[in-house]
Amino acid sequence: MIPPIARRFVAGESVPSALDHARAANEDGVAVILNLLGEHYDDPGDARADTDAYLQLLDDIADSGLDACVSVKPSQIGMDVSPDLFAEHYREIVARADELDAFVWCDMEDADTTDDTLDAFESIAADYPWSVGQCIQSNLRRTADDLDRLVDVPGKIRLVKGAYDEPSSIAYTDKARVDEAYRDDLRLLFERRDRGIAVGSHDPEMISLADRLAREHGADYEVQMLMGVREDAQRDLAAQGIDVYQYAPYGDKWLSYFYRRVRERKENLTFAARAVLGQ
Ligand code: FAD
Image 1 (cartoon, helix red, strand yellow):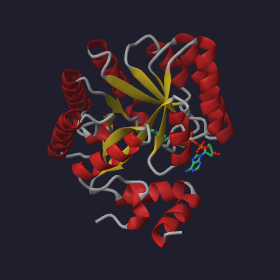
Image 2 (image 1 turned 180 degrees about the horizontal axis):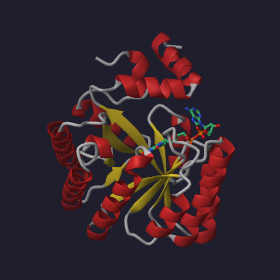
Image 3 (image 1 turned 90 degrees about the vertical axis):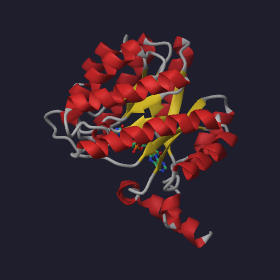
């Protein structure tokens, strides 16, 4: 069972608890992106099992009528077995989503997987333009070129700063430089697209910039934040009429995800402790 201290960041261990969480978020005007926790499977059976779990989850979401979609990790659905297996599973999940009028995001993992992930996305988005979106990381030096290539590809793009430690030969490692790259990437996206832009950040400065750029260019965008992080802001933005999606992980592999959130920002631990102590 998930202890109260972790419940702030994880929507339960089971699909019903994840759907209950989505229902509550929807009542606050916030849509949900469900992610089954799991990554780095080198056994094809594990990758197949989670692919099947996502296919079932898409059916469950469709039956529930909730405003929810899913996000998969490449290494969860086969990348560590082979890029081909990953691409096959990614396509299968998006094809099911397309049948159900649902939506699939693909997270971006470490830089060794960027090429294979983007190649799969480009090919799948050409066939299912309304059902798929890909995460892109601004900390990578290559991202300006990737965006240039992908900006005209259908499908959505979620721009994040990047969560993986990469060497300075391929990534910006200074936070101010990453922020500058993020601003530049946002500008490029809003200049060249009028839809399908997702701002995956909790940073008030980046969200304000996106809002200004959207007005300037008459473009649609959405804001995506993690469950348990700035949830008041999520509700406030939704109340202002902005499309807000909360990324909510669930499943029994919650422990390492919870530690990551706590390591990221110490105040998360304070919030979590307060939740436990009921203060
Ligand atoms: P930061 O640069 O960390 O902080 C900037 C400001 O934001 C802070 O000064 C503060 O005002 C506010 N803020 C940030 N965090 C908090 C907090 N915990 N509590 C209160 N205020 C806070 N990374 C990947 O590499 N691949 C992915 O697929 C991926 N998917 C993601 C999906 C979503 C929906 C989100 C939100 C993030 C995802 N990330 C992913 C993580 C991302 O790359 C960043 O590591 C993470 O979002 C931190 O950067 P930031 O822009 O939110 O803010």
